[in-house]
Image 1: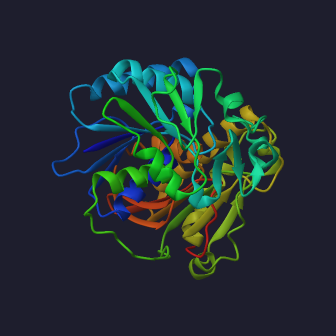
Image 2: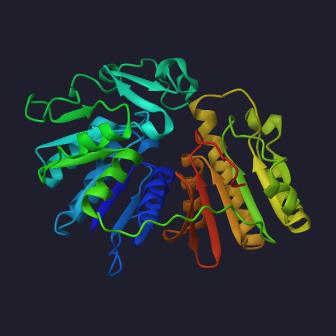
Image 3: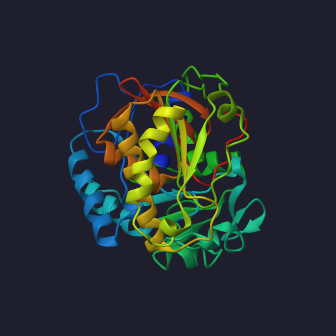
Length: 372
């Protein structure tokens, strides 16, 4: 069995979806629980990317201690563009679980995210010249991976092996999927694999070469009652999407005064009746300027409270959430913690079930494509 420790819930869902697509039995939880018999991949979604560094280390060590006697392969899911406490969390896992070093491959060439000659590129642009420079928690101020992660890491070119340097964390260059496979083949039992979805898929191919790949290409189906939470100022307007038209989804946007710091009580109280009347309701922070970290933290709490009140009013058949921090806040507010995988609609966009409700999670930076 593979146990995955992810630093946010949409990353966890992305990995779970990849394993489901690979034909494997998958469980996802927001904490360590004993997985059911027959589970091939067990994914633990933490929120350490949004925690303080000391809290992130403490939580990573806690989960690692619980995994010590489980005799499983461990994979550390990191953010694809290196946001979060990447180095300190990897060091905590290396030390607690007894690895000698880690091989980190965060980039996803399948999404035009590559590392070449030590520089991170997104769609051909250096990372610091993309929208990631405006991230409220971890703005990309450099495109060089050694600048982002610091002197503790070493760059691993394609033609070098893991014994060429003494650094504990090696970040692998890879510009296409063949490069990813080449780097993954360097992993041995004393090496902690860490990184993004493309690396994980290559690891699955190595460990489960005879799996029956699922080839379903499906869309999200409108339901009678649905809630959509768009928790990013960069969220795509969904009002003209076929899903929104078919379900007659009404969009309730956080008012400007609430966005700018006024209490949200009046707006929150207006939502349940609106939801009962419309049945399909999208709540959105709106297309406003980034308000910074404290604003982002406050907005995700408001979004979580809004969804919590709506679910209490009438439990929906479908909840769609955009953005990892928003998703984690909502799921914690609902006190839901263990999920079964239903579908991978597209790489990174995953449907999972809790009771009779499907929850679809999408990373904020991924496009919807044609599934909504």
